[in-house]
Length: 314
Image (cartoon, rainbow, N blue to C red; front, side, top):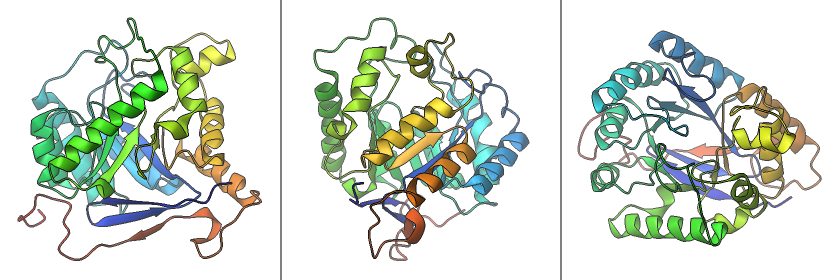
C-alpha cells in the first residue's frame, strides 16, 4: 500500500495526510439534493446532523445550500446565504473539525468564511474572478473540481477525446492560474468531478486511472457518495445508490492505491468503520507516522488566519 504523504493548509489547520484519507461529511441544507434533499433543510437539524457526523469520525464537514445534481436549478445568493449561514455559525461554535462551504458564489464563500468556515469547495474550480479575490484575501483551503458544462447542462451530452488527460489539464490550468494570483498551492486540493459532466464510461475510466488526474503533489478529493453510476454498474435503477456499500467499495479501491486523500461522503460511520478495518489489516504500515492510519493536524504560525487577512475573527 503506497505511503506517500500530502500537506494541505486550511486556514489555521495544516493536515498531514497519510495512508488514511480525511473523511469529509456532507451536510446538504437544500430541499432538492439528489440523495438527502430536504432531510437537513432545517438549520437546527443540519447542525445536529453535523455533530453526529463528527462523532462518527468526520475530519471535515462540507455545508452546501445549493444542489448541483444534474438538472438542478440555481438559487439566489440571498437564499443560499439564508440556508447556510446559521448552520456554519452554529457548527463553528460546537465542533473543532474544519468547515467547508460548498459554493461557487463569491459572496456566499466570503460570508461563510467570516462565520467560521475554513475551506471553499467550488465545483467551478474558482473560475469566477470574484471568487479568486476571496481566496486571495484569505488563508482558506480550496477544493478545485472539474465539471464539463453546468449542473443544468452537464449530463445532456458529455464528450471527451481523452477524459483523463482533459480533466488533468483543466485542473493544471486552474491551479496555475490561482498560483499566478498569489494563492499558494499548499492550500489547494483537486477533485476530478465524478458524475459532473461524465458518462458511465468516463466515470469508470477516471476511477481506474485516478492517480493520473492528480496535479502536482496536491491531495485528491474523491466525491462518489451514492452517485448514480454505482447503480448502473450494479444493474440497478435510480439516480441515487440505496445504502452505501458501493460508495465504500469505490473509496477503498482508491485508498488501496494511495489515489485519494479526501473522501466526501454522506455516511461517515460506514466509511470510518471500513477504513479502520482496512488499515488495521493492511500489510504495509509506515513507521514514524500517526498511529492506526490517523492523520496529523498541526497549527501554522499565529499570523495565519482562516478569515479575511487583516481582520480579527468575529
